[in-house]
Image 1 (cartoon, rainbow, N blue to C red):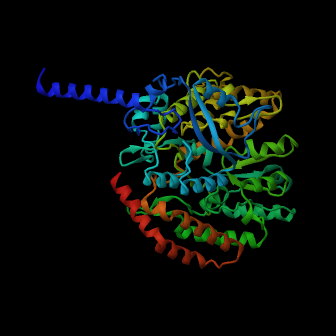
Image 2: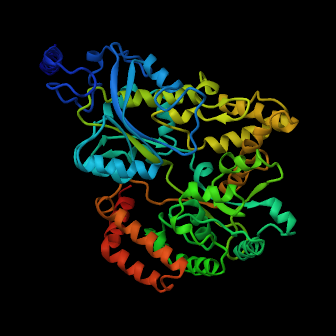
Image 3: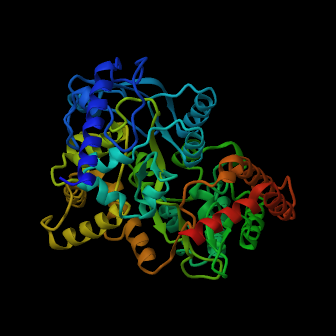
Length: 558
């Protein structure tokens, strides 16, 4: 053996001996609370041998480990009788894998969650596991509070998980800081889940003999016709510029809030400060003054707006393809004369507007730095995809449970969600072909096969609850419209998909708040339209110009 090889062998021997000594000395109990545990290295599966875990992607822990976690439960989440967020099919599955989840706190709704998590971050009262947004991720990364998942992902991520994370090449890079993977991105089907469409009460349209909208002027005319009937024409929520209800209206006038768009010279510029946004605000101010918009929109979140919709006060709303499931189905099951129909958002000049969609990563999952088994987060992601979308999927157990009265999305109980960003487009295309052929032989997922059966029941009258799925993913449904928009290059992605820049992490929340307050005041008439120009100047001065420089440095370095 030559000297170089001999040196490498000795180094390996010493490394193994050192690891054994550390393992013998450690008193960590496997839940991150041990007093003398060595800090795990980022590029190795720390704690696995110590915890007695199977080292395969879905290997169980023996003895079990405990994760302290926090989470929120959305208003739309329902439970089968006897279940709750702490006891359900997913919590039982975790226990089978030797993973005990201990919730430090649970709240309702994402806004309350972000607020409470921000307090936990500021006070350094972190759980082992967290769901974070991009700004929180950057804050925790800068404070060196997160476990390095680089080695854990390389070794434990299943082939399916790795394939999903590679569909959007920017997913993992957005969670990587200084070469270290610090989070598992929650990839989502952004076209179906977020790209906006115009939803209209078609039964009202027919009653008033109104035609389908072909321009933004037509949208205003429909709103005026509904208002004459004592209704509000179109819905808005309080989060102007970040909710689909307003995003779609801005898109109709050529504005693209909260995303970065091409500047025509090879760089990126912030959509919210462009002249088209001012034009849209003028129109919204006019609509508000004419009482086409609920005067209380400035204090209503999505749930409150949905209450106005289900009580028949509003006839139009802009939103994603899944609105038939909630809130529209709540209306239709009570009164089958109610009919909501989606249209591509028209442009100000006529024809279909180009609509925006966010980055395919909606949020991130992280582990606290001193937790002894950070690889568990990768195993949870493996498990989610395995049970819902792999060839061995059990979607009717872990994805959607159908009862006599309703369909319950039990997938929402999982700690993590990782989804193929193109899932909704693939599903709609497969369902359309299956309905045409009368066979599910070419359907690729268990979820889609279940939906195919639901559609057959809806069409033959035996499954009225299939209305919502059919409206969204049927041959003429909302997803078909989004598929067509995507095929025709009428969907615009955010030009910046990197980890938040340094100035974003420091100032974006303040700038976003200033944007929302200014836009709201303009719409309700508390500020003149010229306030938009002042907002643009202030945005640039208070950090926007620096952020723009950082964003373009990122683009140049891609």
